Amino acid sequence: MRRRFNTFLPVEDLDLTRNPCVRARFLFLGLYVNDMITLLYITLEKISIASKISKNTIPHVINMLIDFPQVFYFINKYILMIMKDHIELWERALVDIELAVSKANFSTWFKDAHIVKYEEGTIFLGVPNSFIQEWMYKKFHTTILKVLRQLNDQVRALEYIIIKEVDKKKLEESIKKAQASPTISMPLQDFYINKEDNLNPRYVFDTFIVGPFNELAHAASRSVVKNPGGTYNPLFIYGNTGHGKTHLIQAIGNHIKKDFSQKKVFYLTSERFGSEYFSSLQTNTTQKFKERYRKYDVIIMDDIQFFSNKEKFQEELFHLFETFYQSNRQLVFSSDKHPNFIMNLGDRLRSRFSQGMIIDIPAPDHESRAAILRAKSLANNVDLDQEIINFLAHNIESNIRELEGVVNAIVCQTQLKKRSLSLLEIKNLIKNSTKPKKNIAVKDVIKLISSFYNISESSVYDKTRKKEVVKPRQIIMYILREDFNVSFPSIGEKLGGRDHTTVIHSCEKVRDDLKTNPLLVDEISQIRAMM
Image (tube, rainbow, N blue to C red; front, side, top):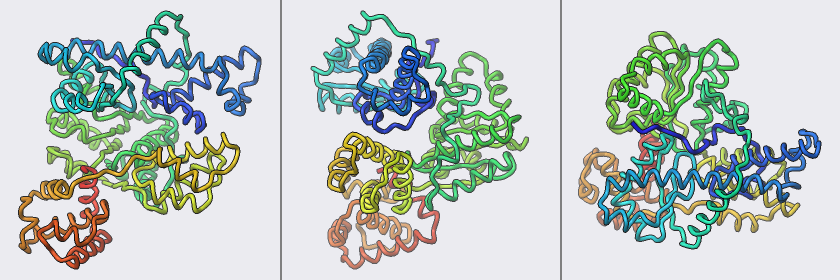
């Protein structure tokens, strides 16, 4: 059996700093920004030791030393080291890919591909043009991803980036230089998280910003840490990426570890659980696997949606669940969707999840986004005008991570220019910092929502007033208006030639129902997540 290995250092394993200027300065590297910040501090410590500068002065001189040649010498070495890891991983992957595809396909489509970067479980594969990009995704995506996951069990996703040939040549030249130069040993182990519990010490309640959109989840989490295993067991938190789920559930673990030192806490992803269970089946060590996880008092498991369509993994999780629940030990789960909407999740698990508390963390509302922007900017000693905050809160709606990224960019520009930025400057700044909103055809919205409610697409256009059709049709109208700003007359025309007043009434009906129907809120949240 092939030995698994991890060539990349996950961001969770490193202690972090909060210098936005440094973050912004290293964004172009295509690596973990936090890794770079940590490296900078390591380097500065080396410099301080050599020059007998007190460690306490390091944070104050970081901006002054950012262009110091010795800083970039150390960082460049580390960058090249990681690039070398990328090439080694891809070379290993190509060996297996060559066995899985025909010789002609291998020589045609894979000769110019290479790994560009690795971020938060996603491999970014560089290809020379859009044609190859599309073809690779359609024909070989599953094969490539499977091979990469076999080589590195931290890989979750695969994306494709168009890279010019000149960029590839520069990368190869850099690697050759790195191989010819002596390697510098860096004390990165000093920045690892505690492997006994796998928790990130940064994720605590004190740094979690509470607003109307997440106050219920926060309150439930606070209740859990007061009485682990007794209150809300299990606790199941769901929501889209970037809404703060991982921060919150790890904060639970860190707090329990602090207040109940005798309790053993462990955090992991469901993918890791499944991977380890699969390995135990192959090596006939399932009993050892079971005993390992049953020794803990608190299990915190992220990304439960990974268990979709995986019956054996679900079975093992069910037995672990029963063991913990019967002995009053705490279980905490997270997912990107409500357990009722996880495809092919067993009824037994759904029932067990419902025994405790299931809470949604929706997208932050306008007021919460404004509060987050205010808190993040003040934490970096930048006081943004209310007009600017309102503008940012209105235009950045996706998730908290994007809000933080924009604040970091603003803080960096403020520091570099040594003055406050105008609204016009910030508009130009976020124009390049935010992702464009998704475009989707009306027919695709109709197809997706029809499939979600298990009705035929043709019934949406019919004049029928059947309840099972009316509701999805109204939601289609609501989504087209709210998310894609399609005009009322246009929506009516697209949906069977209906009058615009009918569309207005439907949108208002859905809007009113959302205020009193939490199930409808969940359903629309799931629909939006699939778009």
